[in-house]
Length: 285
Image 1 (cartoon, rainbow, N blue to C red):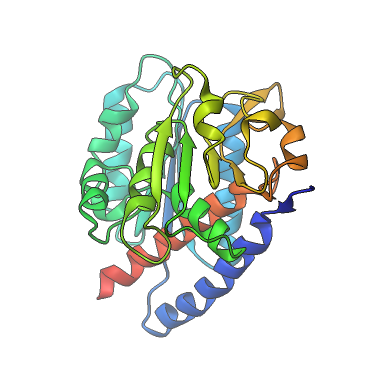
Image 2 (image 1 turned 180 degrees about the vertical axis):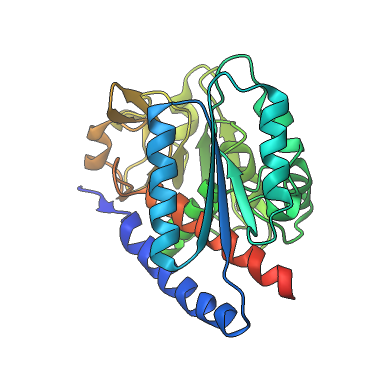
């Protein structure tokens, strides 16, 4: 068996086509969606991510604003930058790029964001609304993973989804999204992590397996049920090389597999654009 590819570039292109229509409708009402970013320090992968996000936004015609702070910035200086974007009427949504340099507290920074402008869906207010099943900004990567699966016709309702990883940006919000009673959810969800012994005992039970632990090559072919859909959401860096949580041998067992490059990444960026457009729509509703 050779896995079919969960092509994130194709799925993201479909989302951008949808957004173009909505952006035109906003323009007819005199509104240009605005996306802001705050980067603290000089982490090379973070700089690349920020650059790609601004490129995507510009291609769609969004207004952007980029605030960059030195690694020596204080927690207070970060909070001042957040207030600048909170109060910028031309910016409808923004992100505070993770990770922070040592000694700074990312969670405290997020608390200072206006929840309505939270493009990453990580503010406690938005996470709480997600748990309640109330519409609110949703974390981009989890939402992108679900869109990636549905775009390629992978059925989610009633299936057993195993998520490896319990992090704030993927594992926890994704588990809640998938469990909600809705057409792209309503799944049986199991969350495990690298602290669990014999991970394969759980992963082999998955119809859909999502690896989001940030542990290179963690998921091997013997840990996958033949024919399962496998999403490689966790990555690490070895120098400049992106390394996946999913070993290459999984392609010979899985029914569907997202690639290391061009899988989840484009979906995360597309859903960030979507969150910014939705925030602009809410601002005039």
